[in-house]
Image (cartoon, rainbow, N blue to C red; front, side):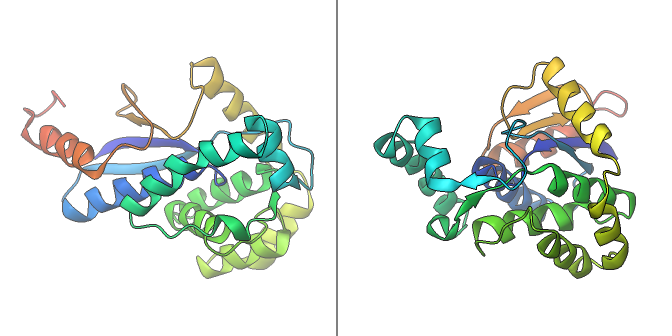
Length: 214
């Protein structure tokens, strides 16, 4: 197997698009060699607990309503190409994603990381849910067959908070400035929401490479 690290944030639309494109490639190449691991990268590490009004956040980030609309036009276009129906108008708040990243980390320990990461994308972008809400996170955990009571107990404290922040900081120190960022075999960096065709090409090249040379 070949390690494929994914650095992302559950509130990053390009991360959802990037994963969806990768998933299509993995489905088309069912014998792919990737062992996937998700890693934390907060788009807004200084976001206050409880988040903020999404419209206010986007207008502040992109310089007003017109800037926000312009910035999201390519998101809508590429989401449609990826087969995603994003309900952006249903998102009321931009949350702090520290707890969501903690949940992804715990899911990784139980071998359910991708299921939880994708469920967080769907909850936020398609169901309009607040993925900072501990009840929402518990429900996602339980649907992924994790112990909801244990997750709720962990969320009520600060377990692994420092580790998530340290891993986020480590990614930035290594030069990651935006997500999604994919790292193949801890060597080759693939930035951005690449199309399925690129990932299929990567998988084919890995399959054709002499043993030990991939």
